[in-house]
Length: 295
Image 1 (cartoon, one colour):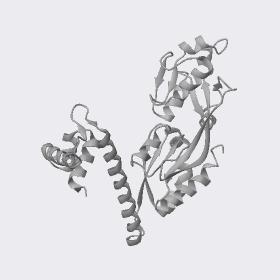
Image 2: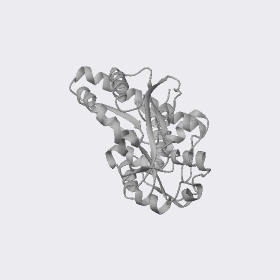
Image 3: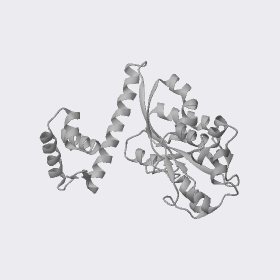
């Protein structure tokens, strides 16, 4: 059996990234935290954390971190399920891994009635749709929206539908950078807007159609769905926008590549064994997502 205090110390160090921050979080000294981690390492018979700046988890340390995060999530689910019986009017906390466009466009409008009815307190972990899957794997979230079709062991992957993106620009931007036609050299000098360094959707389109990789053309990085769209609307850049967002913005934006819409499939990943309220959320989301996602 693991020692709870030792595991708590290890988990804090792994998640905060330092012994000092872990000590402050647990109201202990850094030396006390270090001693507890060393005792845990002695029990395992191997190093769990490579000391340095930054701290690095060994393979065993990473496996233990994931195990402890899963245990914490299961305990939270159990406590919330039990609290529903003892205090039926209390709120339930649910953590979801979501990509920014889903959050900005469709998730909350189609979850809001369920959240009110079930008294759910939502905690959102934002990440690229290619990365949210890892949040579920590591035990950080209860469920996630991802482009990954394959389910992890113990989980299920349920198809929600797809979001369609189009490469949009303002007419003034087109007049400046694409006065005659869309060609490779024009895309080499025209500034693009990309969500963040994890977002490879734009790069995939330019590589496929023009042989341009990220780094061979100028780009802004704007990690906000609203401000991302505003960059395009103000004529500062061109970029991929969801069709729904285009309709909300302005009719004067122009599709640079109308023959090449980008379709991104989305899947809901959740554990097969989950509390009833998460099962109901899954069913609600599957039904409501069809109203805006192309299924």
